Image (cartoon, rainbow, N blue to C red):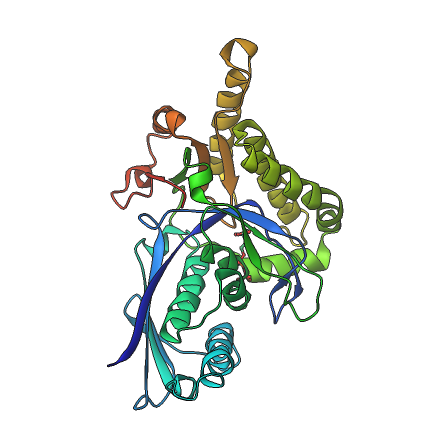
Length: 353
Ligand code: DP6
């Protein structure tokens, strides 16, 4: 029988942003982060891995196009770490297990969303790669252990190995062994929360996350304030809000952290701008929507939360009951945004899971 395995991993969208590394090789962050993993139906990567004694070298295809695996690079690191785990956890333990760690692998990965959409595919991509090799190698490791490997592909990828609400602990060890992803709550704890993705621009971003965050670490004093005085409290507060299913508090913290992340980008020298005029106009619409919702006669609670990653696209979190109203609002204010009605579901809602 051939040695082959296929696995999918969804995109995750951070509420408390990861921005900054204390170790660029191991990808160890300067702060903890927390995200929501979207459900498998909408934005995901699917990866097939195959090991065979006849393969001469490790090879990789992304969306059907072969990519070079740079020696010593992130992809090569993930593959060799997974082979090491296969050897230590399976082959060294069970002498009858096939020596898959000595075979080369062929890996093919597809995204079910256009890469050009400007939505991060590295998180789902490296999570799917790690999960697929873990299945191929029959590793007994739980997702939190596998997150240590996905993290070395792309930091945010470690969070996509778990569903629902996920924290990535910054950790303290130089080895990175305590810098892993853990589930705060499963999707079933709070299925009412939905994510609406508004594709403001589908062109590729100017500054990559990797180089942008490094420049922030080197030049921003505000980042040091954020790491020390803001993120730890926010991590505790948003975890409590999730456990209590308190959307108002969840929304308040999520928007504050998105805005601080973009402030830290502006505090970088030279400054980094990820949001554009449409992004900022969407913020204004959601702020006004919440201002009205916060009036005592309207219930006194926020009804939506925006968040922006390293690009202009908005992700809006809201309870299911508000999603239709929010879509009408956005279409009313931004009738020119064709991408919002894209059949790929880019302007659809994604449940969490
Ligand atoms: C703004 O995980 O893409 O989306 O670790 O260098 O690959 P590397 O960076 P990446 O950064 C994601 C940054 C972010 C915030 C987040 O997802 O937490």
